[in-house]
Image 1 (tube, rainbow, N blue to C red):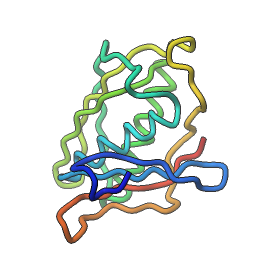
Image 2: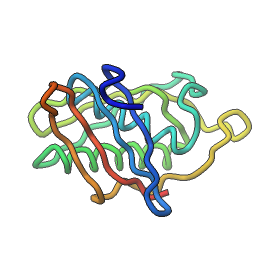
Image 3: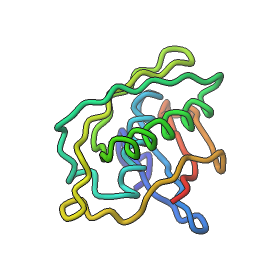
Image 4: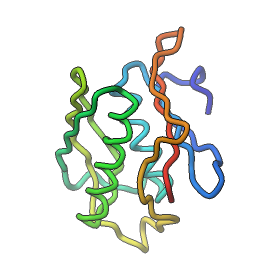
Length: 144
């Protein structure tokens, strides 16, 4: 999907044995929400995830690129330690601080049919910025 085709969204791009996530939205927070959704999609179809439980997540970093990696790795941590998958994210970014609520449920292998396990976000192909048309883009490679 092309960023120009929708106000917000995400895509996966092949990258060696890993997955490059590319997400976009009208704000940096929206792009970060889409990036987390793209990461979920590397595991299972986010549309199959019910919003049964809310988990608060917060992180800080000195710049937007590092904040994206911190955010995605915080989501990976919550998925792993709680045995959950998330399908919806509400993100607020203020300066270098991100506060979010991740909505999801316990992983159900039969219903979610996980295809991979995300081990973490990396600094490879890391990008966060605003395009000339005002769209925010967030991208990085995740280790699966």
